[in-house]
Length: 136
Image: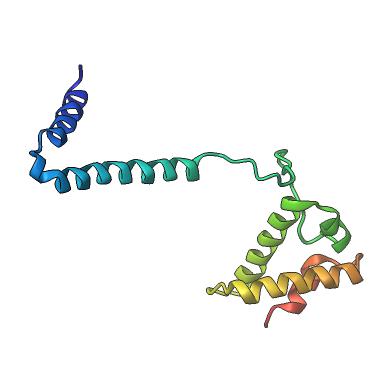
């Protein structure tokens, strides 16, 4: 038996050794142990991989010339692949502009507007669309 196992057994016995008039203390110790187990279980669930039912993302590494990427090519991407590409392009434009603050609402609106403009002009380069939407 390891030292840890021995200490765990001793800890369990110490809860049961409390006199009857310390039943409140016993309940608190047991509740603390149970609460700890619940928290630990929750963390394990959050950290475990879960199938979300989302479309799988291609794991094949690709090289994309973003200066040649057209709206049609962007719109041809599906699900998470398109989202990831849009997030990357958003960060690229912000970096070129020296922007150091990311406002989720504003950036999300710009991305939605870019997708709308791309649908209207599929041959236009995506970077031209994005540059036109971001502040100068």
